[in-house]
Length: 169
Image 1 (cartoon, one colour):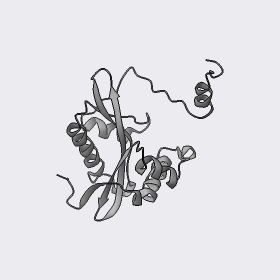
Image 2 (cartoon, helix red, strand yellow):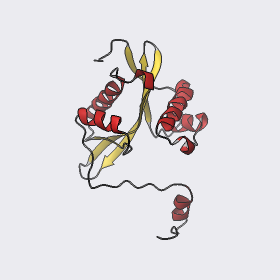
Image 3 (cartoon, helix red, strand yellow):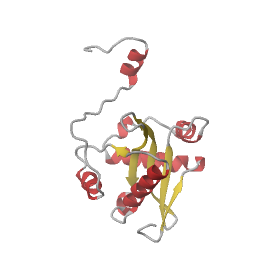
């Protein structure tokens, strides 16, 4: 059941790759991270709709027009002994925020997590994004105190893969 009668959620298809890329770029702009977007439509098509799919995408359409998206994939909790869903990206067009679209996307992900027997739904949010943090808390989500996220990319990733370590390690 949706809050907005003109809102429709659907799984993305390969025909939606350009739209997904637009949403990724818009999210990166909002997060001041546009310089980090290196993907393109071909890479997204392979990753999202190719032989070895690594993530899924839900699209939100309001009155038949693209309104937002959620990119998610399965994770695994050794403590729970079951899968989880990890929300990589959630984005609603700025002019459409406050209409329940983000809530509906998250509610559908929660529904999928329950349907798939997942033990949790997780995501990260930038520390400065107070509107998002407040929104998530209103839904009943809680921040994970005591955890620090780590990421390895580029040269450091390649160096470790070759058996070496980064300078200063």
